[in-house]
Image (cartoon, rainbow over all chains, first blue to last red; front, side, top):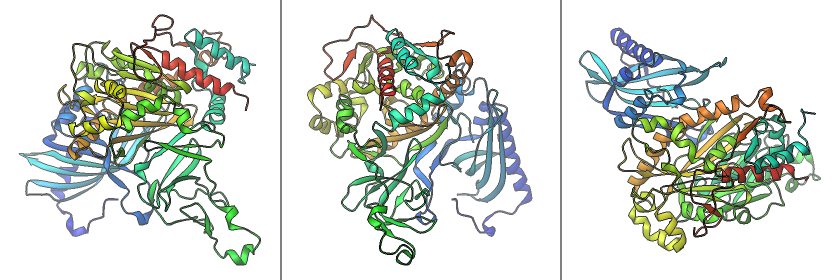
Length: 177
Length: 444
């Protein structure tokens, strides 16, 4: 579990809240319209992109995140490989393409490591439909981002995705979260 | 007549295999699935954990032998026992955590408590309710009949008459020595296993790992297009396919003469003296020149030890992943994937090895995400009338003809098993299904 922060640690600023929420909606749109190259432009070159593994533990045993094992452990180079792969003629996991929706909510903004950065927590629900499936695959969880200001826009410098699932319920994770 | 699996159907599979064909109906057939549980998964050795996952007294992991919940605990003497993870009072799933450390396990239903030896040590208000007649010794957790390890791999068997694990592994031990027994302190699991669900049958994933080097050029063509996998479709055919007893098999993929690779899969030089200490000359000679080991320990423990780069051909880094394909049904598996590294490897290598694994394998891996997609497509197409017909009226057989009757074994390969001079073969696949058929056909 990511620890719940005290209310006064969040930045209460409606304009910023709107700006960051819209940034995430735009990000979701790029992913869900399969414009992965434009999405890739949102990453900073020192991106750290991770999805640590979840396990089931007794409440007395502490964190149920296993930081030493993950489902994504990427930097700019490996993310570029992932994105480029989706534009090849033989990325079967997404060809025929999946229909996806990224629902992002509960955006909470905190001060970042310096004045150009924000730390942002959000919830995500990722829904994927493939082929003639009538029941969608889904992945839910929380994201913790470091966003960097880049002129009038933002870049994702770090994203840690905490899935709710100890057993990932989809055959693969060909998308981004 | 076409509905129930009978002896003729089973013996027909054997006949078909001898001609390089496999009836398609067996792949996701619900009755076959039940037979596999009865005659394979309940009878043979089943991988449950690696010793490094439970290094200390009271450490435990919760695992499954298909649908049997199993609690694997290290006791005070450092021994590892496995128990059916079900309270003996009313049968409730006792420990639902995946891992942890405990002195005792208490069932939340009525409070019966067991120690790390599996003994019943506490009954809530016991004396007043059960009197003197009930002997607590008779109500301990039920032990899994057999638990044995090889180089840290813990296997269990629900069959008290199982042959010793080492007899079952047979020639596979020689190759496990190379992958798991080469350094002085052995291997350790990084973090915890990745787990994910795939709508396919366990045989599909097991047979890819046992020896299907042929799939790499097409299934993983996206990485060929990107220039990070070799263009030559025959590249992965160099080396040997090794058929072993009891349905085990593997590929030992070596580079073509024109390609040079670092010795010992590029593992850190600090470890090489240990390899020389722990392995025989013959094992070293194979290990030194090999790029990839992939194989399957029958029935459903697969392994893969490849070398992968970060997006270019330089800095190819080795990792070792072992897999258990837990059947959840005839067309569903839960994939468990552990990543192992030499305990004595430098930290930097451990991190690189782990990263190369996560980038390329597991559900998010750039290679494996395409495997699972195709495994589900195989299962999807095996459920119709024309696929399911047990009398094969629709010629519903799939093709395992590669190399049949024209690729001959070599006699100068130093390792055990029957070695063939290419990995593009269906020899080990046929071996896997021949042993599978033999077990399904057994009376008891």
